[in-house]
Amino acid sequence: MAMSNADMARNEFLEARWWALALRGLFGVIFGIICFTSPAVAAFSLLLVFGIYSIADGLAGLAASIGQARRGERWVWLAIEAVASLVIGILVLVMPALSIVALFLIIAIKTLITGVFLLMASIKLDGEHGQGFLAVAGAVSLIFAAILFLAPLFGAKVLIWWIGLWAVLFGVALIALGFTLRSLQARLRRP
Image (cartoon, rainbow, N blue to C red):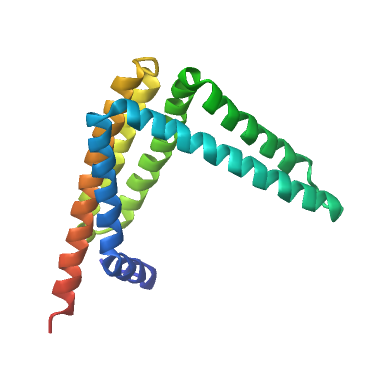
């Protein structure tokens, strides 16, 4: 089956950026190891980063909504979203026990979406460009999301271990994909 110009361009793009996929995978493996060795640190880190991000996002949204209001543009929905982000950020930092359950549900939603899109993307790749590795990363994400949805109250430590397992498996799949693309790129450059 002949490849379209878009397919060839996407494959060349991936081949040239093999290292970014491998690096992303390495960060996943490192985070996974932290989850296994220090689950409390990993949980607190997730909450802290999410809480700070939500507050910063809310402040930026408020500033943007004020600017839009001054220009006579629509601003109400932006302000509502900004206030919601601020409230969520503050709640996460003030009530970490309740927040951790909510955070894991958010992670489950994000992981589900990632898994679906990775599987969809793997369908468009040919086997030579790491289709199987991308499909494995998508399947691991979907399985992890299902586990989080089915058992959100397992306890922070167990959930952090699941996150660690997902991060390691996802990371290994991306590292393998990156090096597969690297070897393909090297093979294609040979005269």
